[in-house]
Image (cartoon, rainbow, N blue to C red; front, side, top):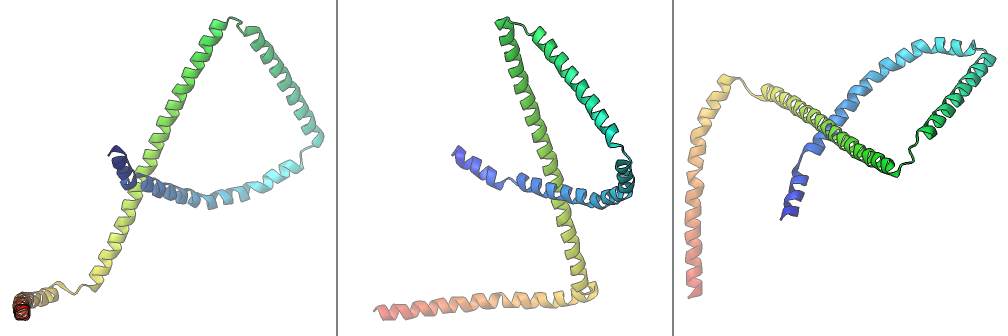
Length: 193
């Protein structure tokens, strides 16, 4: 029974659909920003291209070589520091490993909570988007109804005239049905005898 309830809840929960609608709406919002970014890149591109053309390859090579030597020295110093600080006591290593594992679990739980919050925010945004879409559709339908609907004075007269006709029509079919049933019953009774 619990599995059926879980399946029913999963299949009837609109949150994933709202999430998809929210994601689509956010994607559209981001896509609207692309033309402005392209224009900005077009404006900045000539100056960047000139800067690259005017750069001396030897100066770049020297700068990269210097940075590589500095990075190598930094890495060697860090490795020496780490090796010097390694505690050979197994108890401390075990405690450190356990502490790191617990921190990892805590970080994973924190990311799971953040992911759930983000999912809910996007789903909420999607729900608002769907409501807005539905509202726009309702507005369009209302506009069509106003265009099609006659003026209020004319609409009341035919409605008043049509009400007695509708009332007169309703009893007539009921009266017709009753005799038809009796006639059918009379026909079946003599044929059975």
